[in-house]
Image (cartoon, rainbow, N blue to C red; front, side, top):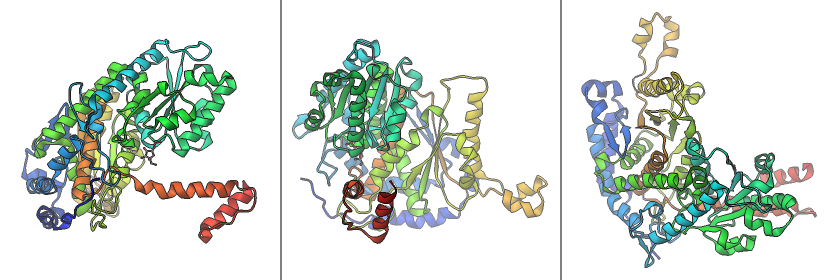
Length: 545
Ligand code: F6P
C-alpha cells in the first residue's frame, strides 16, 4: 500500500509565497489597464489545442502571474504526478487505487500496466462487447421477452453512474437515434421512477442498471422497483434477461440481483465514479449515438489526455484552467466558479462538472492527513446562456462577490435557425466584455443619467472570465471538453496536495440514513439516540406520515 510521506506545506513553497506577495500588486490593477498597457493581450493570452481555443486574457493576471503559476506547478510536481497517474501508480492513496480514466480512452496497442497487468486490452474487450450490444439494440435485433423491439432505454444510476450518462445523452442528442427514447432514473424519490416509466410499455423497455459498487441504496431500490414494474407486465422471471443489463465492477452483487453476468458490462476499481462516463457506464451514450460516435468521443478524450501530458504548461489548457482557479480561490477569496455553456445541448454540463469538481476537490486534509491552511475546491455551478443572463448574472456583474466565469461557445450551431446563433454568440462576447471592462460613472453620466441613479448603473468591471471556443459540438468535442476539466481538477488537486479521487465525505450521511430508515419504519416506538433536533424531526415525521 502506498502511504503518505510528509511533504512541504503548500504555503512554504517558494512560488506560493511569491504568488501571495504578487497578488497584492495585481489586486489593485484593473483589467482595463492591463488591456490598455498591452494592445496584443487579447491575442497573446490565449492557447489552442485539439480544436479547443482558450482565451484567458480577461483574467486578473500579468505575465508575472502566469510565470509564477507555472513555477508553482513545477514546484508541486505537477509533471511527476501526471506521469504517476498516466502510468497507473496508486495515487488514490486513501483507497490504495490507481486512477486510470485515461486508460478508458487509450487506443488499441497502447499499454498501461496495473498490478502487473496491461489494462488496455481489457478496456477494448469491454468496448467491443458494448458495441455488439448497442448495435443489436439500435438495429432491433435485440428483442424483449415478448419478441417486441426495444424502444425505450432507461438508465438507473446515481452520481457518476447518472450524471455522465445524462449529460452526454443531452449533449449529443443531435447525433442520437431518434426512434429510441432515453430516460434516466437516479433519485430514490419514487417520483423520479414513477414519472420516468409512466408512459412506457414494459415489453419495449430495457433497463441499464449502472452502479460501480452495485450496492448504492438509491440505485438498488430503483432497480428492484423496475424489476417489479417490468414483471407486472412480463410475468415471468426469465424476462429479466431480456430487459435488464448491469454495468458494474461487482459481478457477485450483479448475480445476486438476478442479472445474468453474461449481460453485465464491467469496469474496474481504478475508474472513479465521476470519471466513468467513458467506461461501460457510457452504455446508454453508446446506444444513443452508436459505437462509432462513442469511439469519436473516446478519441476526443484521448487527444486532450495527450495534450495535457505533453504540452508545455504555458500552453497547456487543463493546467492553465486549473492554475487560474487556484489563483482566484487562494488570493482573491473567490468561492465559486460559474460554468456558462452557450449551447442548449450542454444544459447538464454544469451539473456534471459539479460532481467532477466538488467530489474530487472538496477535501480538508492533505495527502499527509494534515488539515490544510488554505482553501481547496471552490463551488462549481452554472446554467446555459442566455437563460442565466436573465436570472443570476446581475450578481456576477454588480454583486459584491468575485465569481470567475467560464464561457463555452461554438462557432457553428447544430440547429441553424435564422439569426439565433449569431445572437447567442454575441451574448457570449458581450457578457465577457461587460464583466471585464464594466462601465464607469463618467460613462454613465455622459449618457445623461441623473446623478442619484449613477451609482446604481455603474459596472465596476474587473470580473474575470475564460472564453472557451470550439468549432461545433460533436462527440469528439465533448470528450475534449470533459477531459479538459478532468485534468484541470487534477491540476488543482496536485497544487492543494489532496486526494482528488476518494469521497469519504459521502459516507457519514449514508450510514446515518440507514439507521434512521429503520427508525422511520419501526412499528414499535423506537428508542431514538440522536440530538434533540433530529429526534423531534423523526418523531414529527413518524406521527404525520
Ligand atoms: O456516494 C457517492 C458515490 O459513491 C459517487 O462517487 C458515485 O459516483 C455514486 O455514489 C454512485 O456510486 P455507484 O456507481 O457505486 O452506484
